[in-house]
View 1: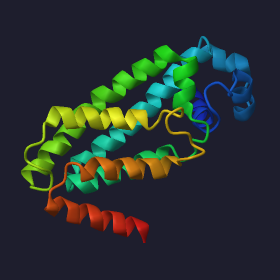
View 2 (view 1 turned 180 degrees about the vertical axis):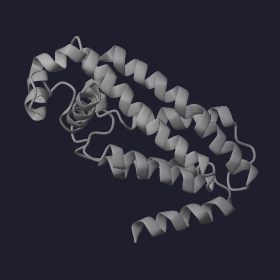
View 3 (view 1 turned 90 degrees about the vertical axis):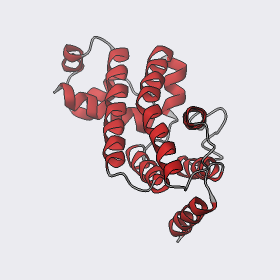
Length: 201
């Protein structure tokens, strides 16, 4: 039951926002009593934390799976983007912004967890790209991997990139192209252009 509650809460939080969803909404949606929810979670904050960290774990293990295939590093980043978009497809309420505003401690913990899992993966992607000659050989791996994380975090900020102006899929595409055009070699640019062109067909 605990897993079912986390699963349903995650779905509602992503779709409607952390602030908007009440324990009553969750109980009604699941056809269970609030008492049942409270027998597993002391309060809404605890449930928000569990749901957030569970979602982060699901996305992290999916990304690890993609990385394990050792694809071309440019293609790998697009595969990861596609995977993340599938998991956040119902994100209509800028949940990250709500999390930051109403649950700042959980937001900070999530950001740290994302950084810990993502930093190594991006650094490895940059190193492999350099070895294959599709990324420039004079890159500072630490700088590129940190600036990439910093950018990915910033584009989720609804104050900087409001959803009325940018859709989630669109902004991720813009950012990925912006990031890659700054680090690819002419050989890498051909791969990048062919991926962009095939995505637009």
